[in-house]
Image (cartoon, rainbow, N blue to C red):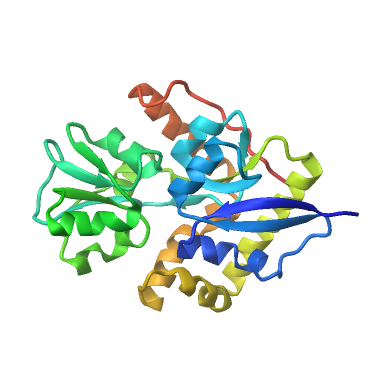
Length: 277
């Protein structure tokens, strides 16, 4: 049987590299499906999803609102934090971003949607995610919305925490905080879609069972942070919800969209129909 070759988009972040290691290395393989890895930053992948360019891709949970008619959420591969998530930081201690400029890593990111849910009266300054820390340190902006490794390294940069969105979300909902999703295009045949789901879950489970091997690969994408920090970051976001979001993870995603709708940041509430085994 001729294999179906599909494009698989994921970010160059250490957590994505960790979970996709077994697929990249040919450890998780299929007789009917093969993947070309498209490795780009999440904002670029969000834009590709808007144009339906990739059969499978990682996207921001926020962006699923824009592509739900063309893509289906996969039950594995999600990035969810329990009690942690994006943080807002500043040079000097402050307790609010009202009236402040905030460097943000793209308006299609879930982090930006969450910032709008939890704060008002700020001026966003959009820029690449790897520029936001320097923006606040240099005084270009008053504050910065940090994602990725910046969530755990900001204090080492001499920055002060304004608020932690993950802490606020857990206190309010007792659910995991959905940040990133893996989605598959709805026109992928059912047997191929299920095989992609199986491979993806197998790759995640392999990484969690062979942490050192997968982390060796992920370190190539760690943007200069040391191994201990990289491991901490990776295992924050590659967790039980990544293996299978389950009903709890599904409820968290739908609650995020409900809150966005209630604050007029989304056009409608939606019910997710995840691809599950």
